Length: 164
Image 1 (cartoon, rainbow, N blue to C red):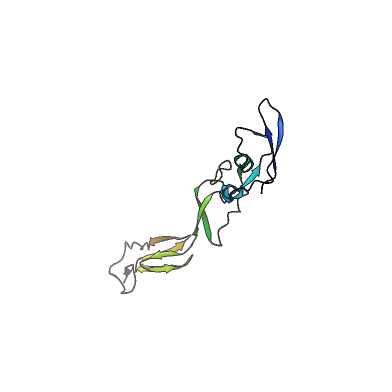
Image 2 (image 1 turned 45 degrees about the vertical axis):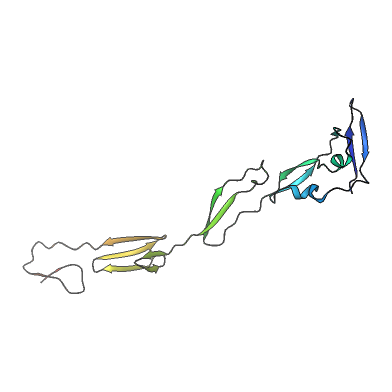
């Protein structure tokens, strides 16, 4: 059942319309008209009487949907947030930022293996790699240059030749 509404009739005269005997359809309830990110705020200004149909007058929602406070946007530990749609505080249904959380992993993936932060490994006898902030950083070993060597040889498990 509806209560009472203030109505401005012809000639600007304020009347109170008794809505106590009018049963409103459930689809006209105010809360069901707002998106989930907003709520209904009643407007208590008088309605302009355009009809003698009391149900349309008494059951008409008076007010508007306004954005509710958006929940705090938090991603889990070791995750970063990426906003894919910025919210608009003036548009119910689009009030809050839309985002996804992604793992902020400091692990590195190389040659189908996973390495942890600051872990170092060799990919051959002359190249070593280190995992730094999720990126693989590789460097080749700099071999010394021998200018006065009569005989040079390369040990089997080493990168650089030696003077013999």
